[in-house]
Length: 327
Image 1 (cartoon, rainbow, N blue to C red):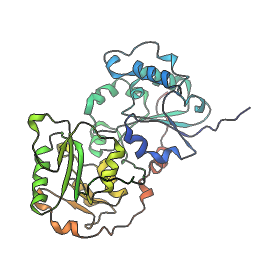
Image 2 (tube, one colour):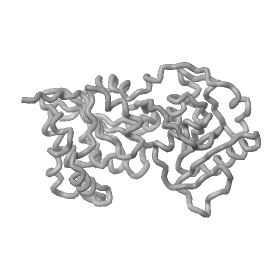
Image 3 (cartoon, rainbow, N blue to C red):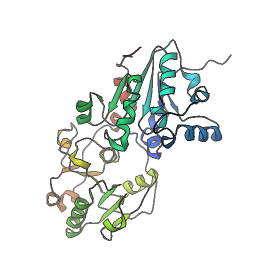
Image 4 (cartoon, one colour):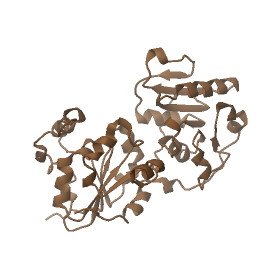
């Protein structure tokens, strides 16, 4: 009889391509199992359709129990062991009341966690979560303001180092890749500031209508970029621009890209000044485009720190302290 190792942590994979890259370390941790759905590709596709948001918007579709024993984490769940199961915001099962109820009633020692992957309130997921919040023991957010506002648990984002792939993408002194989210006027101002300093920008801005687009040689307006291509651009950039929407203050994915790949960072987030690893050689906090100087780009990054401290494995120590809070 084959004995199956029962891991302590079970993560449901995020749907977007960056999740698997940013959480690569979890796949190599023997005490972690990453559930990617159902092994059979056809059944997995049908399961995704059955759980798709557009079909479950008002009321959850029936007969979801047919899938519960087919998820490839089923054999790793143990009724007699304290385990942690983590659902990210960008996985539809995170909002399945039927599946969450099944887990809670079947596994009495299971601690159930929900992780926000966006600022709370985006994409109506805060409202969706309200319908299943009673089934989770802990709600995790990377935005400290959101944790205070909604009573959630705060946990910084984590990120796995991934060796950048070689590419022939052109070099950029400053790189921005992201959605518009009302940031285009500031991005244009920053672009013009750097162009005036003789520096090269490459900005990729998505989710913006043609009539709102402002033409600049180094700005591309496109709808989607695979995350592996994002990292290729990061590898060929000297500095990453991080402008948070709505004057929020949190450490975003762009911050971690700069830290992990030892790139310079220009950010409008004042919290960067409080980082234990803050270095003026690597990080520049700006209140306006005029705060950007050419001298900042001319110095090497000398800041030294252990990038494994940002690994997703590091948050497992914090999760291990959490208890099941609901029957």
